[in-house]
Image 1: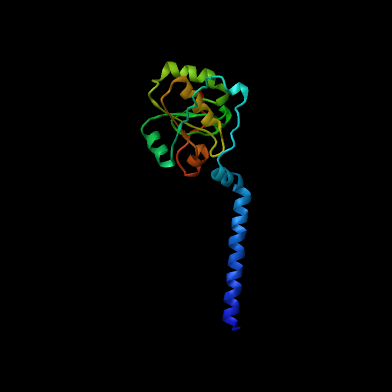
Image 2: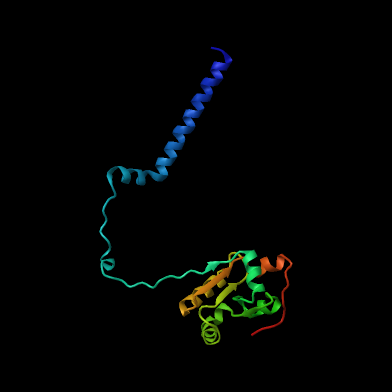
Length: 172
């Protein structure tokens, strides 16, 4: 057998092992789904407590805001809320932002309902990606009746790191 034929044969054998290995791995991870598609799902009776009608509260989600949109919204005078603790707000915040720390949300949201129209756009930010405070505050605003609530996920760090203006020391 020529060296080219031997190399081709080895290559085909290796390819076959790779394909068979992939099929095996796929079956291991998706075997139940494959079996259910072939024979149908196994019927499972719901737990007794779920057979009754249960009222659930609707979950509302704020809209995300990109960095470019955030610059436009700040320039347009949109209501901007900083959900970080007041100490961080005083160290630096977006120019037009009002402090509304998440731990003071109950009183702050009630105050906003008296001061602002519910259909006004509201943007909330906190300490950047991975900080849940802005999302949590935004959900509270939505539950309170605000209609257009958005979250700037990049938060203060993205704004500051872009070299955009910040203010210091002011607090509400």
